[in-house]
Length: 343
Image (cartoon, rainbow, N blue to C red; front, side):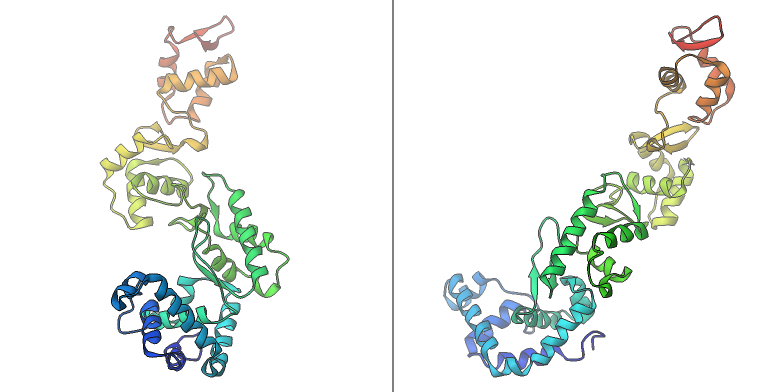
């Protein structure tokens, strides 16, 4: 039995379906997957079965649901509907359909019977899935509207590259719903509400961001490599990256393949022999002379010592390699004060 309700949905719907004539009962059973098969038949499929139009099937279904609502049996099962409403309220007053049904039962048939009860009860409201939200049920329209606005505001505050720790996102989200009843304002309910959003998502490291971002919607080795280096927080050798992908995400990552993927992606910068950093950390791409050129363009003429110091922050290389590149007179010139600039 479910931990959040005490009654058995199948027993309740069985009592409700008795009030219907055979064909109406069969239509409702097939439309909602209440029989031996949990598959829900379309209006067209049922119409073909009876030799009637899909619109006629819709009329029969609607009339049948209306008959159930007007019946004494429905009034007699009001306790079960009240218990379902209390269950939704205890979960935050709004919960995704999939999560709610999973909490009710793992059995698909029981889930279908529960859904019929939700459809029948006037106290239950359903938001169908769209581009922003997953299908969910709620019992308080004001609360649902507040949560929707809060989810949209949190999304608007994120760029495509942002990754936010879960605790930080929850704090931000709860700040958006500060006027709601205190009983709803806790971490567990906040996570449940966040799960309703299709525009926000969580990556394999538990960090939140824009759902469509490659930092969240991880598809291939490059995305996993990005998360591995970001989690590490400092440059990594490609062999370390491939091992981290296996350790963090349980995915096989061949070292040579990993190296090739890192080279192709502008999110990564090669800063030493096989050593990669994230370009978002401020590292400059290109060979050593390109790095020197960018530094001089940004800072103006510099001494050799200053150049070495700044390049070493961009590349893990020997001082002599930098000095050799500075001797390229087609690329750099030095004034009487010993300061270098771009030729």
